[in-house]
Length: 472
Image (cartoon, rainbow, N blue to C red):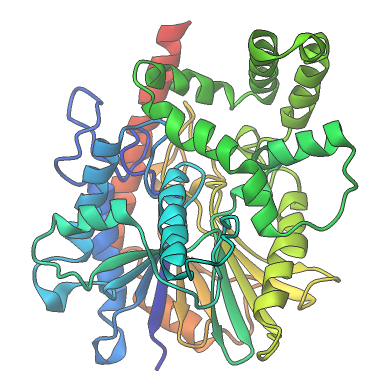
């Protein structure tokens, strides 16, 4: 009999006032993380209904695939408390009622990227402690191995977990970045948040390419992160916590829904900084650099394209798969069995989907791709492609998507479904059939979740519409 071995969720944005998993105070609309949201409570019940069917009480490993904490549009304390409500539901005092294995994996995204910087420093410090005193100290590296490697704690997440006094020290969150993989024979499952599938997160690399005439070529993930980590960390993970500046950042994020406005903003900011701090030659060419930045941003934001599952038709995803991911896979699998069946799971876009991709120059010509969607509402009207999903993986690394909801103006459209990459299988995998048999969208707890999700999306879209109307 199949069993759920891994549970992957992403883009919860705990602490954000537009996350359906963050509780809002009645009447105020302000974040009140003293209790879980109705959607979060119902989600925990749905997962419990499925995991309880695992034979022999096996607890799956939880994979938090990025943007779990909202650090761009919220504060540390709100994000921490909202995350604690999730842990309390998933890992209650009764050991028999806990959903997940004590070892939890966390892959930072762009909105909680700062937690990777903290973990990276811990990783480097531990390395220095073991290095002989007379040895040359190498420069720090910016990634982890995806298969195996040392356990690097996420200090922030573990501090929150430790607030749940009934959980022992064995319950811990381990950091991997930007990729995590598990292998079973010739099958491989790879998890990555997915922000590097968008061009804007390579902004510093592209500027360097243009300014220094660097030849284009395949670049490893460590280089991508080394060149762009400060930009990602500053704008997407820490700026919202910068005192009085923080609240104004939300206005900036709202402009991201219009790619041209956001491009103008970024370009103007780049030119202003150059004029303020650059030399005479830099100021003279500041307008040229500003135009370059604008051209790199305009029309390329996934957030600004709600009518397509992948706004660039998958070009950024293919670039990430074929270059840095493939290079890391070939390096780490050089002496082991080569996979002929690969599943890639990412989030970031907030638009869940499942599909088979054909890549002629990849390790395998075909791979299954899953997107776990997101749990925030950031437009004044429901967007049909946006929604939340949980990816479930069995012991054979077969995956299915538990499609919890897609936004809709019609509450009747909210029904939990099960989907797999590729066309509906004539002979579905045993895992797919087993999960599908356990999901009855017209019965409890599934129907309660759908009602809660529909109500939450309605509240959030109305709140955004009211806010935007007040700014006009």
